[in-house]
Image (cartoon, rainbow over all chains, first blue to last red):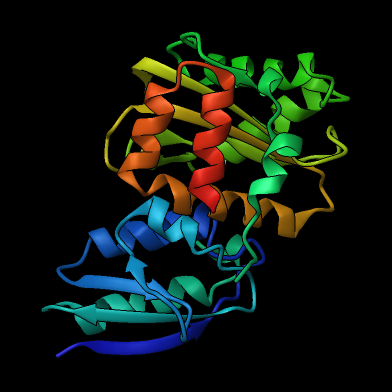
Length: 92
Length: 158
């Protein structure tokens, strides 16, 4: 069963630079398949930096996350933390 | 999410003078300077040092090596007055420290004015979307002249 949530992006840079790299790293650190994208659009592989960059997701945009696998809930929690933490407070 | 750039934008963003088909330096920082100099020589950059500082600062935050053999060093800086794109390709690959460990063989530089924050994400996302397709990457590797690179980019963002 897949787990899903929609998160509004907080960092000023959007899903870009440090937040994007923390995001992709978190996906790769968990045992789950994760896709991400606009709530009403096509989703991409969240484990790929170029795919995540292709979303062009900016501050204030909603991002839909879908995860499947043993770590699905844990990875969604971590991704939500990254997406809702202002860039200067992000330690990853 | 941002709107895509359009095929018509290519001539303005990346005229032939912004494209190199020669081997760039093998080291990342030298490669970034090499791409920057394409834009400097094309008179797109008012302040080379400021542009370089902005590029390296962005690079120190986290690498612009996005994987799949692609590097996209970029910065928002008032050293440019309009969005500009440059391209070089490497046979040997340049180590951009990307997460997938692939050296960059297709390298783009994006410089946009500091005020043009939307342009920045727009160009970066359009380019990334196109470069995810293997045939676009193959076309860029196979391009025999600058016009063929521009054609591949028009296809990529169409």
